[in-house]
Image (cartoon, rainbow, N blue to C red):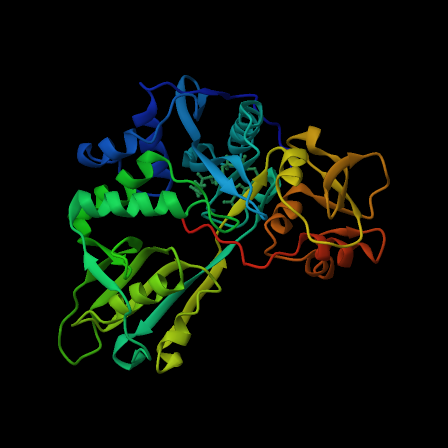
Length: 409
Ligand SMILES: CC(=O)SCCNC(=O)CCNC(=O)[C@H](O)C(C)(C)COP(=O)(O)OP(=O)(O)OC[C@H]1O[C@@H](n2cnc3c(N)ncnc32)[C@H](O)[C@@H]1OP(=O)(O)O
């Protein structure tokens, strides 16, 4: 935790709708983009909901901003908690490293807690930023690259996959996503403007396609969104025609396999890339040559902040096992700090001495089940008081499915 003098020369407050475009341009500027032109702003503007955007001001000028979208998060055991999807974090280059983001985070975390959000998540531009504010890596995803010419799928589609153009495609996709979400732990509900920003905004410029899978009963049960960047269409490998899968959700394994077989079967494609896929998605097993599928990257996806620790610990379920007492530290929301006794039946706040102690960002990393307490003890991310405590906590927090979000924002 740093000790620079915080918030002496700037103020933080909630922005109103006359200020959203300035905030959006400021954020884009911190990512080195120019302001959004009118035809793109119309999609971004819908995603600014009242009371959810903060600005930091110095000398009457906006110098930093943070925002969040209203959402829900699925937790282990099938529960769902109120969740804020934090985004558009930026501080103008001439004001960085003076505590501006820290002041914005303080205001935002406090507001989320008051509004009843149990958790917040974000996607981090850099890994050094958010741990101090209590965000920990809670899910991972992987990026695939499949050489389509050698992939040779081992099986054929069972149902029917059809391309559905334009708004009709989006409507089917959206209906299916809302039906399938929240699904596994880590999935989040998408806010209405997500679709405009992710689908409609890019549909024109990037040739986005939506294909829908229909089962033998004729009902839609999965979809894939993808785009193809045409290459040279010759034998040189300089610019391979690449199909990129952006979003793929299916009700069951049969629909899932059919959607992959569909994208792998499209003619005049050299390479199929997929971004942000679950780490346990068995694409390799569909292929005749599993080496045709390369994992290009496996990296942090969800950075999770438990805004209300007692509520979060009560919202998920636990496996059978011996109880454990966990001590939690939280510098930004001190009301979360304390000892929690976790048993197979749930979690309660206690006055007992903790058997292991961790910062709230480390607790967040264990919360959805992606990493064990023993791993975090071995890597010295938590303090072990009783040497048997990590194994007891592992047993209670264990999950059967790897957590995954699958929604980029
Ligand atoms: C969810 C999203 O939107 S991700 C996108 C995040 N935005 C960007 O990456 C845009 C470019 N970067 C920025 O705008 C800014 O650098 C920000 C927002 C990341 C940080 O804002 P700042 O006002 O500089 O942060 P602030 O001064 O409050 O920093 C607090 C502490 O974090 C550290 N820190 C902040 N950002 C970084 C960073 N990018 N790398 C390393 N350390 C950092 C500071 O050094 C400081 O440490 P200290 O307390 O030990 O002194």
